[in-house]
Length: 88
Image (cartoon, rainbow, N blue to C red; front, side, top):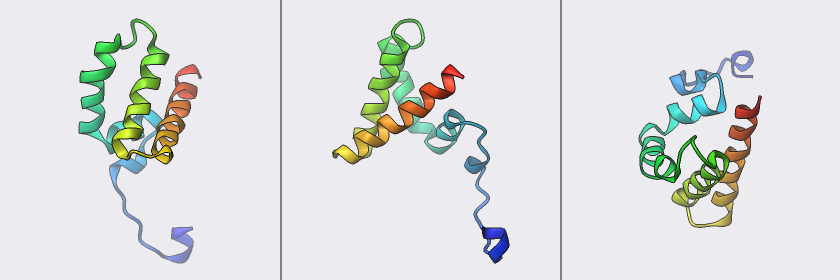
């Protein structure tokens, strides 16, 4: 739509992501590193209960963004897309 109307868009590298996980890695580099190093890996990472570990991380990521149900649902939203991406 922007090309048709002649509007200049921002060409940030994050928008060239090829997957949901790639987008998130590019968008919040320090936040995702913090959650990976201090929460996901101590919970067991990919070695045990990785889906539960991901759910916990994304619920807390939602709470980090704001203490309301909207942000908790936002965390669940990304969790679902990341699980779909891992399964397929």
